[in-house]
Image (cartoon, rainbow, N blue to C red):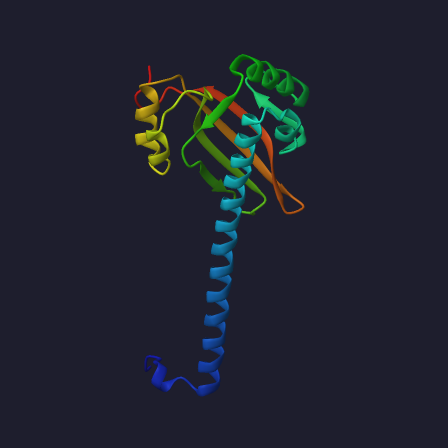
Length: 181
C-alpha cells in the first residue's frame, strides 16, 4: 500500500484537510488568547485590590469577592474580613502594598483559577525603590524584601461569574520561603 502524500491526496480531501487544519489552528489561538486574557484579568483584579487597600476601601475590596467569601486562617466571612482590614488600615495609616507578579493557574473548564503571591504592607513613607525593578523576578524580589520586612503569602481561589473573576476563598500565610526564617 502506498503512503499518502500531498501529491497523491485527491483535491477534495486535501481541501477538507486544509479547512480542518485552519479551523483547529484558529481554535488553538482563541483558547490561548482566552487563557492569556483571563490571566491578565486576574492580575488586574489583584492590582485593583492592592490599590483599594492603599485607599483603605474596605467595601471596594469586598466587592472583588463572592458574597459567601471565606478567608483563612479563621474561616472568616466578609464581616470578619472587614473588621481585620479596618484594624490593619488603622495600624498602618497611609500604606503601600508591594508584591511581585502573581502566579496564576487556570482550571481546565476556564471558570476557576488559583493565584498566589507574596506581598508586603509598608507605611507609605517607607521606601524600597529596588523592588519595582524586581517585579518580574519573584526570587530576587523575595531576597530583597527579606532584608527589610516581614512578608506574607496570599493564595486566592477564584471563580468566573458572568464574565468577571471574583475571589471565592483567600488563605493568608506568614511567608517562610527563600531568605526568611
